Length: 256
Image (cartoon, rainbow, N blue to C red; front, side, top):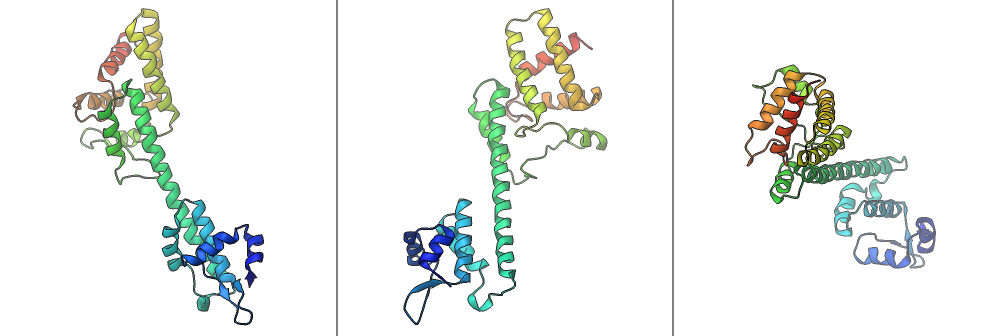
């Protein structure tokens, strides 16, 4: 049993906070029948540790209370072998995993919006809303939405290879390099010169070679699919078709 003073020293919590938790029924102390003083037993200490842990994860006190009701053993069920602590920690780890997954999902969405704006070359509300709509999909796997391609257009081996392409919303370095190349391409398009175009064509050829592992036929089929999409329902949101056509012309004009 711990007095309020002992608990304050042990947990580094204020007396006022303990009184508030008592008032709202979140953490009730044990009142000694002998002297009327308030003490906290091991179950209360366990609850307090849980409250502080869940608060650090961003939960409100209103959200924490049902968690405690479901996960903390009653005094009559409390065991001395530490199993109650293990059960509690398992529950907190499970909750932390869910929080991590949600944060990764948010990162993916934010990156996707940012990358879409960069890809389009300017802010377009339609592009951003389209990305957010797609990324609210329940199809998240490990914080990302895997790309899907029509099985009637690609072979099984090609579909496997396409799964390795960088995803919009990911932190793939290949995607960062492509976005930088798109920016460089816009500059060259405004003032085209043979030397700059040849250098740019070489960079794109190296970029595509890394994406498709040198499979030119797969590369052609992939971009044919991208080009066939309507502007209203693009396969890659924010993609500048005019710019991509220019890149295709460059790579054809200056083959390796």
